[in-house]
Every structure is written in structure tokens, then in C-alpha cells.
Image 1: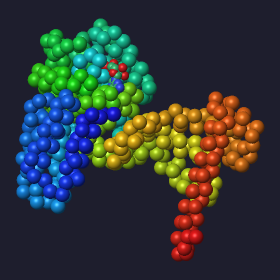
Image 2: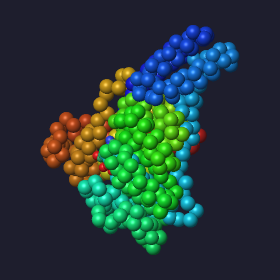
Image 3: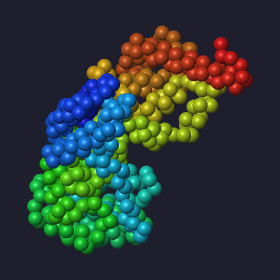
Image 4: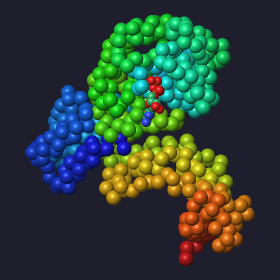
Length: 443
Ligand code: GDP
């Protein structure tokens, strides 16, 4: 989980304050010392930590807090606001050009995740109605062009390339002409990376910038490299000028130092975050939601957005009608499972629920996505008739299903039981609704 250690420490330090009826300056100072250590351990830039703690301290020893009836809550509110401010306050969006195509140039060191992110970003913006074109300007890294083509194919996004013999500036220019001709209103240029920042690389990027005049230069950095990521961002910004940062691999970054320092150090916003290796694992960055996650307040808004994207409204309506008519069967159960699965790994969803992310007892539970796969396999091994009418599932049918799905009869039994319980519950809800509509009482 991202910010794992930091979240745990901040929540426990601030939790102690919450329990106190009155706070004095020493309480606040002690807590702030712990907050400071927690931030430093999370690899947040030293100067950023100092400024942050001073700001919180100044506000927290103010009269308003000291005299409040819930001073601890007040301090948490201040920490939340300052964390949000640290990360840029509001979501920083891509500014699309009024004269398409909008040109986005992706830059960054090798291995940061530039090529993958180019695809992810194209996919995300395509869902929002854009018609992207990916342009392959990384002619040095072996297989970079092929990689972009594979990503493009998976997302059904066209990729423009001219092989690895042409000058990247020419490729970028030709790519844009191609986009204009083909009505692509968005061009994402994948540029070359190096292992370290060097002058040759910067010159090439500057040449592309000068010729192409991109609307956005986004720097892709690997959050797992911590303060190095922040230094890279600073160097790119000074040499080339960037408009924003995409932080990748936040799914593997348990400390979070880069995410908390980049904005303050470079004064450039984080625009997107990479949360996994899959092509849909790129999210717009919301400072307020991230602060809430760190403080264990959950991130309900992102959860709702995910659900809205994953759930097919038409199917949901059909399902509702079926539940009302009490026709809910295993086919519907399967559809629901698939929708839940499309929300992403269960432990990532759990993290977004307020209070739960901090619950110790849930930490060690393995939210097993394989369970969903097993359930799917069992249902898929049933005949159509069995899915419609589970009452015909006798012992020999159950044995056959277990064998077909590579599970055991006990697992099949458990699923059938779960299904029957779900159906019973739905029936009760249906009855309740009916009797409420009639104005009667539910018995
Ligand atoms: P490039 O050299 O900057 O173009 O980097 P690539 O796009 O080839 O990515 C390098 C590696 O990082 C690949 O294995 C990607 O799958 C992986 N990667 C990229 N973004 C993420 C992310 O957000 N999370 C995780 N876990 N892996 C990522």
C-alpha cells in the first residue's frame, strides 16, 4: 500500500491527540516532533518537512484550536489541509488546445515508465472522448518502438513511427502532420530516455520542444526512487521546463516521499499517478483525496468514480428488474462478479473505504482475487439450465461441476449456499419495498 508506514504513524500520533479533551502547546509540539520523524522516514525532502511542520504548528497552537471543544480533531483537520496544500491543493488537469491537436510530450529517464504511461494516458483520454495518436520518437532504446506499437494495439490507438534511423525531431513533426490529416485531436510523443540526465538527451528534447511547441511537457518519474525522483524533476524543469509530473509505480511505493515533495520542490503539479502495470492503472491525481488516504479517511470519491466507470448502467437496471421479479440466477451472479472484478484488485478497493485502511485486523487478511476467479470457474462449469435453476443441482451434478472447474465439491456447495442466501436476502428486500409502497408494515 502507498504511504503505508507514514499513514500508520500519522494516524497513531494524531489519534492520541484526538483522545484528549484539552490540548496545550507541549502536546502539539510533541505530536509535531513525531509527525516530523514520520515524514522524514517516508523520505520526504528535509526542507519540505521543516516548512510543513512549522506551518501546522503555527496554526495548531492558535487560539481557535486550543479553545475548541475538539482540539484533536482540529489539528487533524489542519494536517489534512496542509498535506493537501503540499501536494498542490487542487487537481491539475491537462490543458487542451482550442486548436487541435493538443500535443503532449512525454519525457523522463529510461525505465521510469514513459512508454507504458504514454499508452495509459492515451487510453484514459480516449475514454474521455479524445482521438489520440501515439508518436514513437525513442529511437535509441531497443524495442521501444515495438513496445509502443504493442501498447497501441491493445488500446486500439494508432501509433506513428518512422523506424529508428530518422531524426526524432522529424518524426515528431511528421507525426503531427499525420494527426492533422487523420483527425486525431491529441498527439502523445514518446521521447527517448537515458539512464542519467546528460546534455545530448536534453539537447534533443529541447530541439523537439522548439520545433513542435507542445502544449504540455509531462515528466514521467519513478516514485520508488524517492528523492532521486525529485532531483530528476528539478533538473528536467531547469533544463527543459516542464508543465507537470506523472508519478509512476506508486503501487509499489510504500514511503511516498516523492509524491509529497515534488510539488513543493519544483513548483510543478503532479497530474497523474501510475498505480500498477496494467494499462488502465493510471489515475488523475487529486491532492485532497491523497491526503485523506494518508490520514485513513478513505477516498470515497475515487471509489465512486471507479464504480461508475466499471458498472454498466443498462445491465444494472436489467438486474434490478430481475431482482424485483425474483428471477436472479447464477448468470446474474456471474455478471455481478465480473463487474466487481473490473473495479480492480480487492485490496486496492478496500484501501479507499474510510476507516478501513487503518483497521489493523484487516491488514493481514488476504483479499483474495483468486476467489472470484474460482467462483467464475464454478459457474462457468454449470449448464445453462443449472444456472437458471440451481434447485436441480444434485450430488452428481455438483461432482461434475467441481471436476470441470478444478475445485472441490465443498467449494461448489459453499457457493450454492452463498447464492441461495443472497437470493433470500434479495427477496426480503423486494418484499420490504413492496409492503412499503403499499403503506403497510413489513412483517
Ligand atoms: P520507459 O523506459 O520509461 O519507457 O519505461 P517502460 O514504459 O518500459 O516501463 C518500465 C517498467 O515499469 C515496465 O516494466 C512497466 O510495466 C513498469 N511500470 C510502468 N508504470 C508502472 C506503474 O505505475 N506501476 C508498476 N508497478 N509498474 C509500472
